Image 1 (cartoon, rainbow over the protein chains, first blue to last red):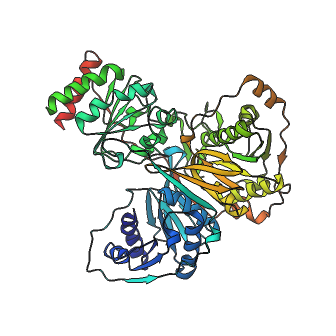
Image 2 (cartoon, rainbow over the protein chains, first blue to last red):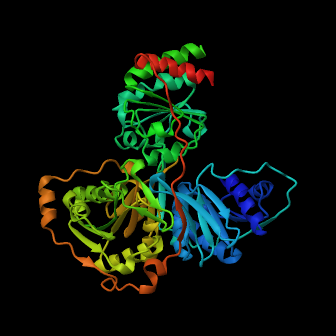
Image 3 (cartoon, helix red, strand yellow):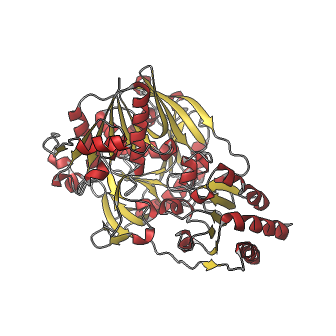
Length: 312
Length: 264
């Protein structure tokens, strides 16, 4: 994500004729500053402190407040990650400026030189371009894969500066006591070239097992829309959509899902969407390249067998 | 027993067919669609559910706040029919044209007026503008910590234990009260109101507070206090050229689909 922000940030900085800086927070950061410069930064600010080992809102907001006051950037970018979702809004309120979350596109307005922050609204039904006219920095959190990283160039020159965190541990009011990984067997959604996703129409946890032979034959990851996750049929980490994972595989096979905007928001970057749904009016057919109208219980086994035969 | 506050928003049903959705590009506004009903934003219903689960476990009082206009009483009272104790509506022309900053400010001022609170719950984002920051803003204004997005909240010996959703699982976070929690859909389906709850909610008096009631500084409200501005609003163009693969029966169509994909 940081590399994507550096790539996107570089383009904006060049349009404005400004410097691009990166803030790296954590512990034992080593040569990361040089690394960031190779990927497009002019300056790297390193805040290395044991209290920054895990992400904790109070510590990270305090450090960023300090860095922003020292560096006075015109624009401040984040990733819409677990950290960014929490850090960016809190920091924006502390700095009394605005932030746009989950941006899919950033640009500079040629006339006003303001940052144009494009983000999906209304569950992806519409897009809004936000501007922040009067307060600084202009802040945006950007969705994964919306910006392209640059090629690594070790010849790039830049400056690495350390900033003291200067944290008082007593300001940290929350404590991470455990991290639980919900391991998914097989291929991770974010890395998958093919995804087979089931929706509410799958009907239950047993139904999701019927997706597995196809996923296995194709080397695909299994995804789900929100209802199967909320109903506990599958782990929440399989959710594709506005509040789940954002994916962009080559082939996205949508099974028994209607194609609500909040789901499409998570998969619209797929190169080819294939829909299997018994309702010919389902919205997913408006998104899909190919579709089969029919009950997945009939369509899927036949499809899986044919796929196996063709690949075998 | 904990005093809890839940902030909810009334919005147009986000599950309405996308085809019914229209915007006025010149006015940068979403047009009300015919036949689309108003609902409590789903993440906010889950915030109500999170508070109710704590009330089920150890009692407490739940006060619901909602800022908006054109309230449909049967709709906005749903948290009461689910089991919340009190509700206060915030309505004033001065609130119109709000962004996340001015909304958070007005809600924080109302929370101060409500007085004592141990836990404040919000949805992770309103399912209309999806801004995802009002909860963080309220917490910053009140000077209390916030955790987002949460999928489970428990109160153990006066300390709060929250499961926060991260990319491949969740973190368990402990904090003391007062604390603000932004609830995510992973919490699970909110309960359905029971008939008894619906009848009690219908009778319940719901006061409305305006900007003056909450002691708000007019300069920090509405369009005048907003930090973010919508520069453009549009519906992305869809190509919409789905090729429906036919067959004599569903199995046959499935085989034809596999063959079609193979071609490509």
